[in-house]
Length: 105
Image (cartoon, rainbow, N blue to C red):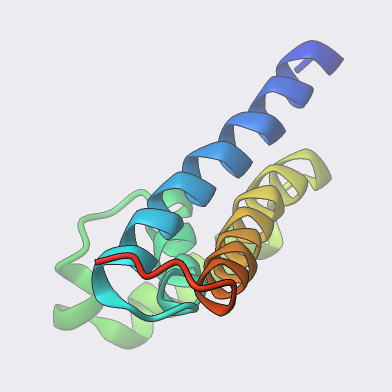
């Protein structure tokens, strides 16, 4: 992965999860809902098996996905972290907007 792809990926994940988080925070009226859901989304991004395996074979599924998480490269961790930072930024923005008097939905 070259530096341009890396920079675009960071920006894309930040903007994507900022937007999704902002909309969910507006609709559900909870400032941090997506920050709690984001680790589950990361598990779904990293794993390569069906999500039903988490219910049928939970110990095997979680051990497999945690092994895959530990084998991620630094580039992947930075990109995924930028998405998490986007969810936190959306929570901060929505709280500041509500404190300033803007009521969304």
